[in-house]
Amino acid sequence: MSLFVDPTAAGAPRRADEMRHGDAAAEEWVFTAWTADGTVGLVSGLRVTGSASWYWAALARADRALLHVTDWSVPPRADPLLVKGHGLWAEHTCDAPMEQWTVANETYATALDDPGDALDRAYGVPTALSWDLEWYAVAPPVWHHTPAGYEQAGVVHGVVELPDGDAFELREVPAHRWHRWGAALAPVPLPGAVAHHGRRAVFGFPDGTVADWVLTSDGWRARRPL
Image (cartoon, rainbow, N blue to C red; front, side, top):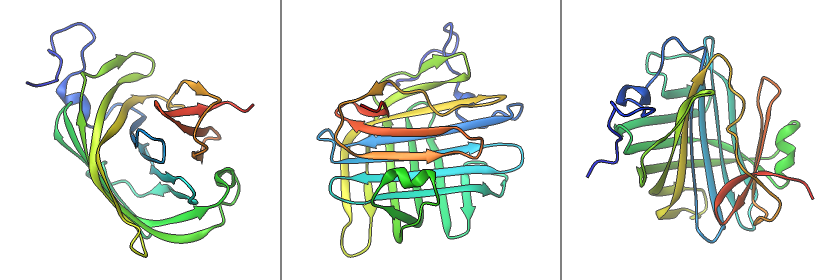
């Protein structure tokens, strides 16, 4: 049975809303996944603007450095969900609107022992990283009006490839996604958290905004300092 909400229902997203809204100055797709025990968390984000696209991703694991990826000047392409930059390839494919996406990348991440270093020069060890993830919805999308868009709960199956035989598989782990568009976008708003597993993903965006996320048993949350 399809999870898609009847498009005639008040406040329901339309199937066409999954893709690029040409009249929007900025548009963003963000995908997350995490293991229930809090040992692994992933973030994958793409924002399309008029002049260039922003791409960011992170892999946070227990007792490992944060693997951090950013490219704030991806050249625009006819397919806005295809990312090709220097040493970077990423693809976001809508396989079934409101139901299934494929989220993949192949790049070099920066390994950061202190995730907070991402707000400075982010010096770290270049580390090969790729993932091929299948994102499946488990609930209908929830519509938001400011900015326009929606979010949706899901699960992820897939494989994360790392050097030195450190690859691992994800099997139906919890996941969430957001799709937003408008004249301007702040980072995805998340509930705050003080208690967490210690895994963080930190991003300083070109417009001066910051996303400082921590991993909890309920997924990614905004970090609240003690």
